[in-house]
Amino acid sequence: MIRFTSLAILVFFLAIKPSYSQKSFTRADTLRGSITPERAWWDLNHYHLAVEIFPETKSIKGSNTIRYRVVSEHQVLQLDLQEPLKITSIVQAGEKLDFKREEAAHFVTLKKKQVPGTFEELVVSYEGQPKEAIRPPWDGGITWTKDSNGKSFIASSNQGIGSSIWWPLKDHPADEVDSLMISVTVPDGLMDVSNGRLVGIDMGNGKNTYHWSVVNPINDYGVNINIGDYVHFGEKYAGEKGTLDMDYFVLRENLEKAKVHFQDAARMMKAFEHWFGPYPFYEDGFKLVDAPYLGMEHQSSVTYGNGYQMGYRGRDLSGTGWGLKFDFIIIHEAGHEWFANNITYKDVADMWIHESFTNYSESLFLDYHYGKEAGQEYVRGTRMNIANDRPIIGTYGVNQRGSGDMYYKGGNLLNMLREILNDDEKWRQILRGLNQEFYHQTVNTQQIESYISQAFGMDLTPIFDQYLRDERIPVLEYYYSDNQTLQYRWISSIPSFTMPVDVEIGGEKVRIQPKTAWSELKVTTNAEVKVDPDYYIGISRMR
Image 1 (cartoon, rainbow, N blue to C red):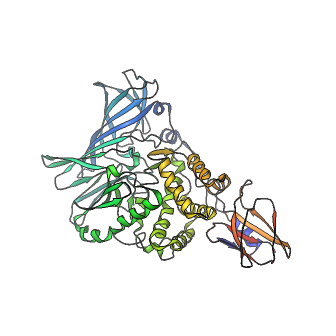
Image 2: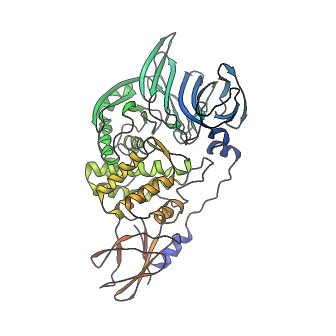
Image 3: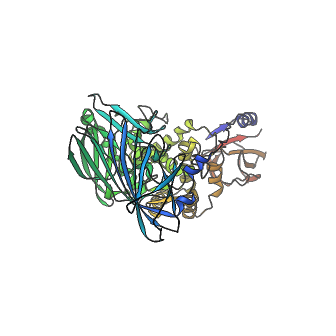
């Protein structure tokens, strides 16, 4: 709760409200972020990505065999690959195809007639030196480093910049591939760890090829390579859908401490299966993999680089002490297996679906293991990280995400909805229901909002509009018109905003339903109104 002691302070707050400038979008943004006509007519079925890694030259060479189902008649197809990588050939049915490049998009003219309902394949060969990540995972690409023994330690991370930074594909989140094979060739003495299950290793000529199979749908930014001097240990987890393989691949030098530290993984699984339902990828298993950067939610291959310490690089992001009870990267990034990898946005503008729910999962982990108040204290503590600078939802069709407030403000929004519902078991069933209703699907915000509203039995549209589409925090303004009449309303809000709120007046708890017009309530005292602290709102008393 944000508290104001006078109207003057409130006016000052509103006057210094952060502002931002709308980005000017380019043709490249549209090609990257929209369902172009050249993307709309074909539906992904399977990728077989085969790449060889050359650490000494920081280069790669390989191919992607793309199988797709023809949805409607069309003869031009859009593929994506970012410079400085180059496509060397595109072949279908034994014939080499012509293509035209515009920015990262490659428009391929097909010779074979594309018949709706049939499946077709393309083989796309490419090579070059992919962009090197400067500040992974935020500024993505390939990270080329060495471990303490001087062996190569290499990884991909590319959520924001796009998977096409290192391999050719249909680089848009709305169309997830149904299955994936990834074959990675590395110099002898190194291992590749990628998504899914290891199904084979080819050895010889001073190099090894690791074949990984993913049998579930996978979002493209979740596909990864991790190359290093890895050693393995694991455990069998008795989960809701049976026995789950939990495997850990760490640098040789980290093995002993990982055996202790990665105990958080099973604790995570226990808490999240309770709150969200079964782990969504039993067939592909669950992995934690050492990475040369902080970490990322790559599906069934979650990368870890938090230094084997509690919190976020040893810090508590909530300032409450509770954030040091768990390893942030293990809990947060694994939480994305449900919200990001199971339920995936169709457009990056709806990235809050990934980050708000996963931020909130941190408090639910604490709730499960340490009690409800621990989780509530944690999520309230994270409010110090909220900027209220711009809307959480971004601009559609141009690969533009919303405010970073999708993390902490989004988590507080969900925690507040739980308070409004005031039925913890029903709330748990809503979270589990989301993962069941949208199992292995790509979704938009409207689907998520509608599901929660329907499960609530209440129209939550004004609340979602206020917290997702407006940057301001609503303020509950009140005064007493006489000793027994409380006047109250919402200010600093959208005109249609209405939301129930639990308050305490003179020791008596009551739920009121403010609107932007004045409402009144008969009371027995004109005491200060105190708001339930789990509501992320402001309050101002007019004097």
